[in-house]
Image 1: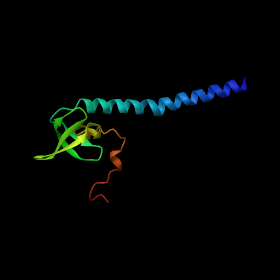
Image 2: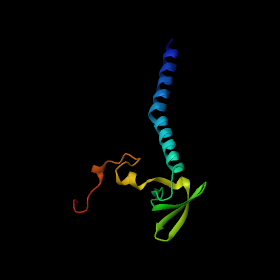
Image 3: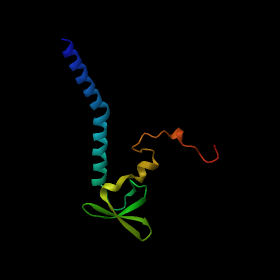
Image 4: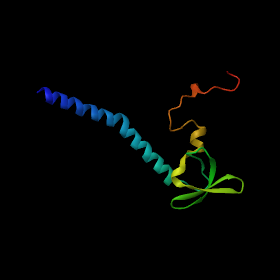
Length: 107
């Protein structure tokens, strides 16, 4: 009976780990894939490396990203992290707390 209780406890811990760690990560990956698939010409985006730009061209696996007037670079579609409107409205995907940011002059 003791072994059955230990097995049940281990099973419960695995279920808890899945609910806390794995399920939200999968949901985040699905949301990112949906964002990348739904890109349209003219969308203001940020790449995973922090480059801001406007979608100028769309292809199956690549996009043309206009980073300055007349300057278009080609990046992988998977390199798009989020839309600029989401960043400016405070809907970033990471849980950064705005109170952690220090304004210039508040030091």
